[in-house]
Image (cartoon, rainbow, N blue to C red; front, side, top):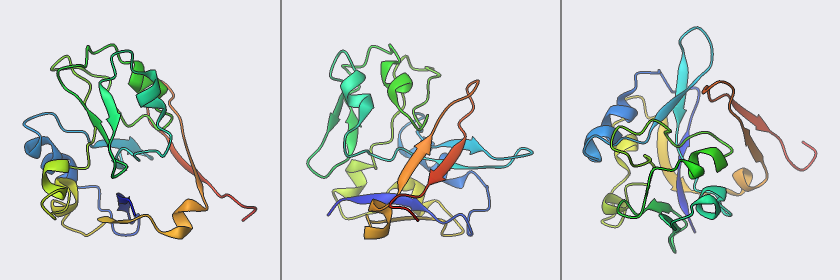
Length: 163
């Protein structure tokens, strides 16, 4: 079963430690952004590694690939920085700012998870708000909705199945 990073909103203190851990683990190309909520507050916004990822389909150079474990990884040498993937992502979690001319993309820290470790963002979270776990059945019953307005990434969750 596929593992993903989950966020417990009741535990998140908005400290940005997850973002810093990701940044340092990936040599300055962090992929954890923060979705603004209100008055300067925000929550970590991390790639959801969709079952049918629109970002992969949108990439003209096949720089994004879905692995057997369900994670979506970026092939750095193939990325031309066209941003097609950032526009295709319905959640707005891929960074469109291109300091290295390559789109930042969460890869679930495949170098760490292949060794049985947790992703850097999870280990860097001091409050335990992020956790790396198998996708529970309850998560499969919901549809996650996202969108962008003026480069802001609002986060919403819509219930599925008539709940």
